[in-house]
Amino acid sequence: MTNEELIAYLTTSFPQTEVILGSQYVEMTVSEAQYHSVALQLKESKDSSFDYLFCLSGVDYAENMGVICHLESIKHRHAMVLKVRTADRINPSLDTISDIWITAKYHEREIFDLLGIKFNNHTDLRRLFLEDGWGFPLRKDYVDEIRIVER
Image 1 (cartoon, helix red, strand yellow):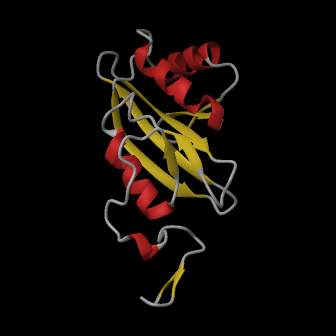
Image 2 (cartoon, rainbow, N blue to C red):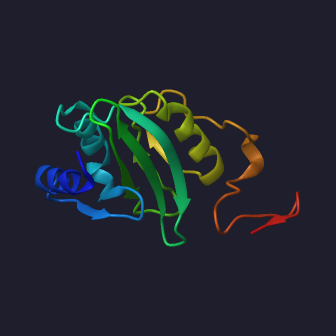
């Protein structure tokens, strides 16, 4: 699909979402409640067939937290970005997508470790790089006086 065809498909299939053409990829923003079901449909639908999750990143937007997923269809040769933001900045959580794309398992652990976003139903959500007492160093409000790290 071309980007224009992908935008038409996504806006028709997911009318409750926001779809735009970004600087490089088609971008779709979903709510927390829609995140898992939309991701599952993007992978399982033969029209989209997004079978490859090639990047999953966490973001601190200051007012809330978010996750950005870069998806590609090897079969159809198109790519897109799926975005979601949490409603709660203090205790952010989203449903895991590691049951959809197994590669998300370690990406989500990294996001949890560095930003503190919890992933509901994740099979092994624990810190990946840091010890338990570290806090979440990629948050904009992170201060660690013991190790003299401040953002």
